[in-house]
Figure 1 (tube, helix red, strand yellow):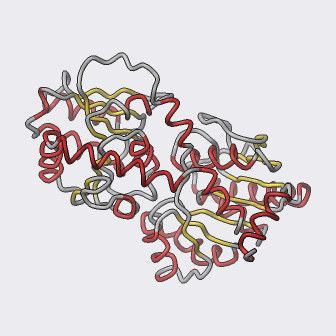
Figure 2: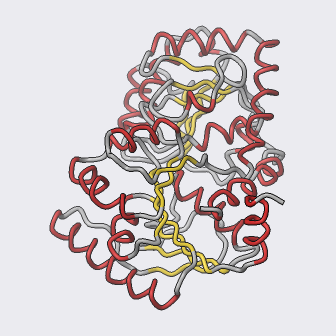
Length: 362
């Protein structure tokens, strides 16, 4: 038996005390990852999810500990909150004596590292998109972490080369494929063809680009565009839709508890982001055998999609190419069917049971 096999068997037998530290579980990709990992790990281990603010949109495993230290827009209180969070975490870590501490996103990573070298932190987005203060803190503090987990090879290279971190590992985001397959079968009361997009309604997700691209398509009068999500640009996107006279073609649908039933029925799923970490929603659509089309943005899509094999990549922020690809692949049925099948094969490697083992082996 190899050393790796011995380690895996030992981990399975040994019930650990595990902590996830994250701002809350209200929406978002990192929150979804904590939801999936905590649910899987709680089957064999004692799990706590340590939050700084209430708000839970996802199922989770274990028990939630809310420290009630919400964010503030005031710069003074931002730093004060870091110190308060660090103090509370220090007491909690000493009392609970966790075997594993997994921290997600900078609002949790920074105070966690300040009080423990046993923390495994996770960077979920392009580090160059953070403000200068956060970038400085990453350079100074993250080298003290037990490990820094990123969800793309590109972010791994960025943190090693530009942030001089040598403790970085790549683990892709997990999927609960069984749960997706079950929920995709729920009945959908829509009697028209549609293209699907999902995400926060903010600049990063590029829905303005998608709306403009869709407005130029040949298929716009035959196929609707449904956009699910909430965010600060909702009114701006409504105005853009109105300006383009597409109120009968494009619908901002708000939140949904079951995106998978839409993914399984969509003509295609479009990710129009300007930048990403590892886009969960893209691989979820692939698990529903939905044709996926994504911008080649930093980071994630080009690691997930093999061009014209399990999805389609278009140049980042290129509206005309996005228009062309939507039209071309809508009419290319035989090619699309093969892409759908290849996509489902790819995502099986991201099953949550396999990904959770990688986290526990760190």
